[in-house]
Amino acid sequence: MSKLWDLSHIRPQADSVLDGDTISAMFWNAAAQRADKVWLREKHLGIWRSWTWAQVATAVQEVGDGLMALGFAAGDTASILSNTVIDWVLADLAVLSAGGVSNGIYPTDAATQVHYLCEDSRTSVLFVEDDEQLDKALEVREQLPLLKKIIVFDMEGLRDLDDPGVMSMAALRELGRRYHAEQPQALAQRVAACTPDDLAILVYTSGTTGKPKGAMHTHRGLAYTVRGYNALLPRYETDECMCFLPLCHIAERMGGEYFSLYTGARLNFVENPDTVPENVREIAPTVFTAVPRVWEKFYSGVTISLKEGTRLQQAVYAWGIRVGERIANHVLAGEPVPASLKARFTLARWLALDNVRKLIGIHRARFLVTGAAPISPDLVKWYLSLGVPMLEVWGMTETCGASTGIPAARIRPGSIGPAASYNQVRIDPASGEIQVKGTNVFAGYLNQPEKTAETFTEDGWLRTGDVGAVDGDGYYRITDRMKDIIITAGGKNVTPSELENELKFSPYVTDAVVIGDKLPYLTVIIMVDQENVEKFAQDNDVPFSNYASLTRAPEVQALIQDVIDQVNKKFARVEQIKKFFLLDKQLTAEDEELTPTMKLKRKMVAEKYATQIRAMYQP
Image 1: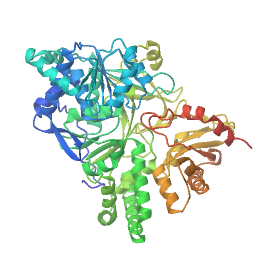
Image 2: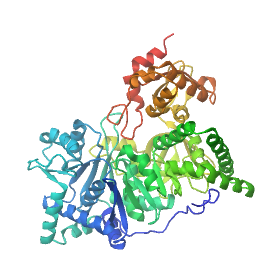
Image 3: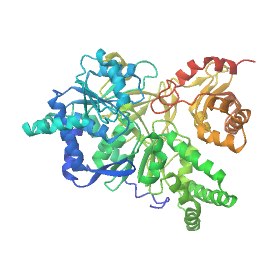
Image 4: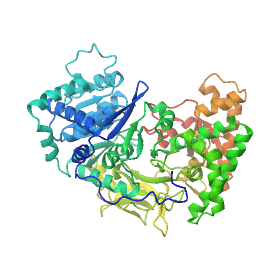
């Protein structure tokens, strides 16, 4: 890996590396250009299996032809209800190749949500992963008159299923092979007929303030943005990337599938969400994109592992990370690194830091990317101290992902960087809101013209809902969501995300929601890290019988109080947290309090735990 103090290896790639003005055209050009090279990899029964571009193209051809044999017309919508697996990508590219609209549904969504999303998008074909997802589809099928066929990726446990409205992915591919023999040019003609202004994908927002809204993205916007990504965070055919975030989310769809399609970088699929730490170490990605919660989890794992180490190991790490911090300080200040410090850093890597990187699985990483939520500047600096630059990007579903990004040559923790070259960004002088304009901005919300109109200013800028500031160098900083800013009863404006990020830097805190709007002081609701807090309890002989009793244990309460006390030292008295409440249930993506990307919903948490919040303000 290149040395930390020399970031010249991360150069923007402005030249186009792949022709095509639609995603489907791009894919078929890529398949022809890279036929025998490996694109996708997945682990099955303990063995990594590789898919070449030619093999992917064959599968997409068969699925696309199969869809056409079922009567799937250009402009029709197909939805995909599945975890992040290779079949998701095959279905997506086949739908686009057939001239259709591809819509992703979170695998954690309930049957009622599946019904709403399929109805709103006018879904005619629904791909589902397995019997669990099929059950949801069958539960609401009678309420979806436009739904013609359900396609199942994994038929395990469904061998005896006899339902004319359901077929396996294998059967669809066989149907496609027969159709292709009769009409060999049909799919190619659909690809050629697709125009840049055709609707390509729908990405539904999480719906924290109402029903989900289907953000519409055209082929033009997707192709334009994915080219722009390479001028922001360059990738090459030699890069190894991971695919593990939900593909129905804009981050993995654009930053994973489509960006990898464009650049040729290999895309490795994890076995399941629980095996991410193990798979990272196996894959050792050269470019690694994740949300802050993943980076926090890795940091927590290292912190807890160190506590189990010998005093010598702890001392060597402490010395090594101090050396790394000195290097990071020079890099962040834009200063040259003294030769003597370089030498000490080389020794620090050999003695400790390289082992930490291997423990995480980032020892081959050229750089790390974080986005989708705010991250603690201290966490960015910690990774930098290990010798791996972390670059923060900012954007949203409506901007097709990243709109700003930190350049590798000038990292500034706490900032989201300057505007990406492919769009404009400004601060509204009246409200302080960050606003965006560009070809990457979405085409509006499906079936909701009023909501679409509300989202744009009179002069065509997208209202992002984020409040921010920009410095003289054009670096933007998010201060908070417009709706999240807290004004206490004393009139003090507080940015809750700053406090929350500091709390989440602790290995014992997974998430936090600061409360205090129109109230006399700040309080916080905390979700603890179950694994790390359980280990703390076991190491300190703290009795507990389940998760709820663990959160109520006096020793655990004291542990979290200590975390809060340390954070409070960094803030003025009026910004300090006075009381806290620990959630006594371990939440998953299926719980309404969490978004599909595992962030606590501030409004939902405040409503659901109103009784506990009131108790924190009792005398």
